Length: 117
Image 1 (cartoon, rainbow, N blue to C red):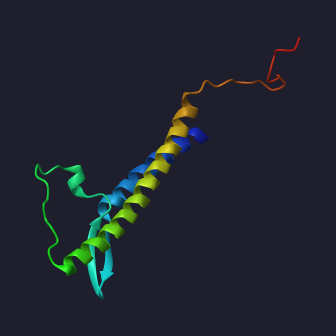
Image 2 (image 1 turned 90 degrees about the vertical axis):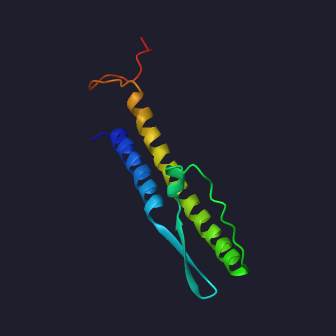
Image 3 (image 1 turned 45 degrees about the vertical axis):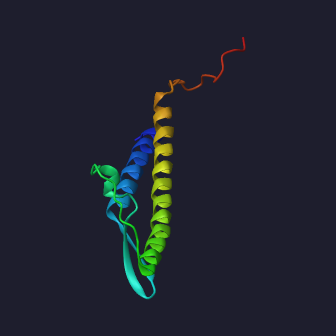
């Protein structure tokens, strides 16, 4: 396998793996000694629109603390997942660009530039 092929394939696999991890992996944190499940970095609501927006508002101080803690945890997870996806996309782009460049085949003993007489 050529280097550009490997870069393209590995880049696409990194994007897909990061996306799958972001959708499937659920985050949690501890608030006031209690374990709170926050959800995934990539919410399923982003993928399949429900048609209505959630208007759930945290009313108690405890719910607001949990919401604030989860916001921080999920935001960090999103940054990690999206950064990994971006790095994979860049790697795939490098592989794609290398694939699209024309190749010059040199024979043994032939000079790289033929501008000298």
